[in-house]
Length: 266
Image 1 (cartoon, one colour):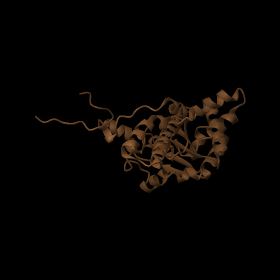
Image 2 (tube, helix red, strand yellow):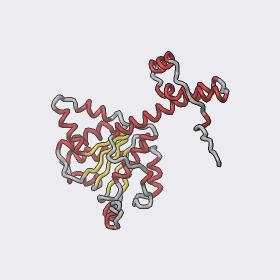
Image 3 (cartoon, helix red, strand yellow):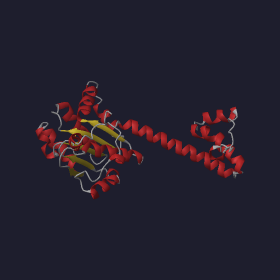
Image 4 (tube, helix red, strand yellow):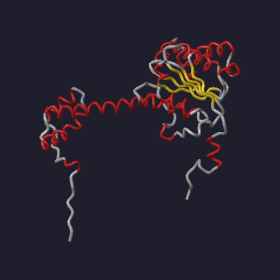
């Protein structure tokens, strides 16, 4: 008869809890990740006779890593992404945007230079997917992102106009490094939404990066909103902008017709 011996994970002995006074100090200093990992690190250090500097290094590394994860989660939640899509699910070959252009956009250098991005083309050609994946990548690189639809900007303008705080509301949006406005041209544009877009573009001009997706090239925005607002908005938007035009059939429709839009029921 053969017997097996269970090997403890990582070879680490059982970790006794921290002394109450040390736990209290770590709580007071707001070092939650050190407090969480200290028992295991201390037990390992004793078993392997670590140098004191190694113990300190391991504990600080756990705190730094934990804070980075928490900060990433906070930035991602604050961005307000619509679906959570990233480049992990992106098929570069399906997009009509040249691969070198896609790769250049993914570096985020244009965001650091406070340049804009306009992705325009027919529905279903990957505009929103690309912008969300770029936004997610920006967040992963430590940048702050804010996601809006044109309708969101109209609501914001109306809600802050009553107490004359529109300027403050726009300034708050500009705390983000990259501001995304999705799906312009899909629906008729209300006057409040058009004014909200203008105010945002004007305030962000040469100060923050803006990325928009639209069914229309910005040159046609005067078909959606008053000509004077459209002209002023497009003038500022395109001055420092990369314009990427998508083309082809709807990827969503193609997948649906091929039976790839759902999982089989049985």
